[in-house]
Image 1 (cartoon, helix red, strand yellow):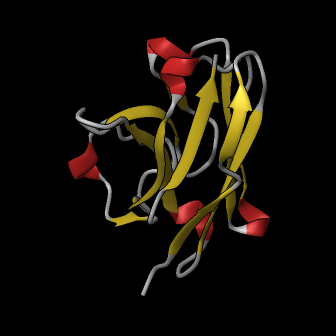
Image 2 (spheres, rainbow, N blue to C red):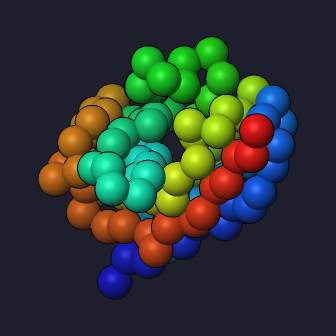
Length: 128
């Protein structure tokens, strides 16, 4: 059974920074492509950033490019989302997701349906 758990959410003023962490247990962490999604009230859940199992391929949504950085430490079964220059529109519940892709270390998933395991979510609130 794979467990995915996020941590590090909270409240911050606009312009501030937060770092989300996500631990995925189960198989070897490098077997999983990882993604961060977010969902605001009344809106669909959308991809924020994603990384391949090797960490060598990454993706960022246009809304966060240049402000957010996804990274991972495979030895610690952990991925991170460093969020800088936060804006009120970044307010959402942030979800960590894992996709079992042990046969392709360069695969990156952009769609919800491509991910197999999800964390419960972590609230990020940015005030103006």
